[in-house]
Each structure stands twice: as structure tokens, then as C-alpha cells.
Image: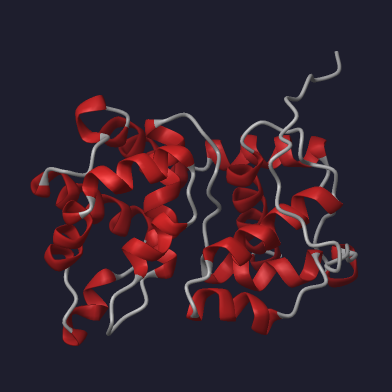
Length: 227
């Protein structure tokens, strides 16, 4: 029976970034069926399943949704840092710690809660924007997990080195432009890259496609490494 997808008409698309053939570099073309197949494989992956369960259990509890309690926010930062290997401790020498990050989030907690609930891209920069370090990758994850687990939405795409490396195999966008999105903490442009990739492969009707395309790109990289 054909799967009925829900149309997502809120994609941000740059028509200058056209589709590439990932198979030229040994990667599989993104199709709706393959996206579903890979998602099933990711969900069965022992490590991902374990970490995903921990995130779902903690962030899924309604009392942990808000970002106004310092102890809860510290716990959430540590959990996301550990399960995603974002290595926040490496920034300690530059004056940023889990505690200073928590203080920053709590200081704008009510505002951030509303922004993340609505999928506002500016929430990423609020969390990422320290003077001495760039927490862009962590901030995208923090917003994404809250948006998906707490509010059941799919407004944020995660940035990490693997996804950034994989995108140019699928889309004609300069790697330096992707890096610039991170360096300038321009989440809106980064989201536009992911949304354009989704559009040129006709994946926009798949529920939670932003979350799934992250899993797909991660899995393609993992499979290539295992060959």
C-alpha cells in the first residue's frame, strides 16, 4: 500500500543549488523508500537506540521541557553533550563551561522556550553566541531535540562535521559556504541548504524529514567507512 506523506510546504529553497549524483562518489541516492529504510536501520543501531532512549525519556518528561530551572538545564546540556559527543569540556580553557552555558540559557529561558517551540532560527544563535567560542553545532542539537521531543515538531536540522562533509556529494553548494554558516552562526542559511537538498530529491512530503535526512547522511558516511 502506498505510504501517504504529509506535505511540508515551509521549506526554504535556493534554486541555484542544484542536485548532484552522489553515486559518482559511492553514496546512495536519496529516495523516499531509502530514507525510510535507513531510518529503520538507524533506529535499530544499538548505540543510537540507547542514546535516543535516554534523550526521549528525559526531554520527553513535561517537567523538563522548559529552560528556566538551572539544574534541569545543566542536566540537559550534559545529556546532549554526552550522547552527541560535542565535547563541551574542550572550551573550558576559553572561559566557557556547562555552568556558564546553563546560566545563559536560563537567563533567556522563557523567550527560548517560545522560540524553540515555534522553530525560530534565531534560537540557535542565542545559545551558540559566546564571545570566545562557537557552540553552533551544540546549539543546533539543543534546539532540534527540544523541538522534536518536547513539541513533536521538525523545524531544526542538526549541524555536525559529518553532515557538513556529506552535503556537497548531494547538492551543488560550496563546502566553504557550509563552513561559513557555522563560523558566522547563520542558521537560517544552513537550514536553507538542508531544505534545498530535501526539495531537489523530492523528499519534502516525508514526516520529520529534517530529522531523517540528518540520519540518512550520517548513515551513508558510516556505511562508506565500513566498506
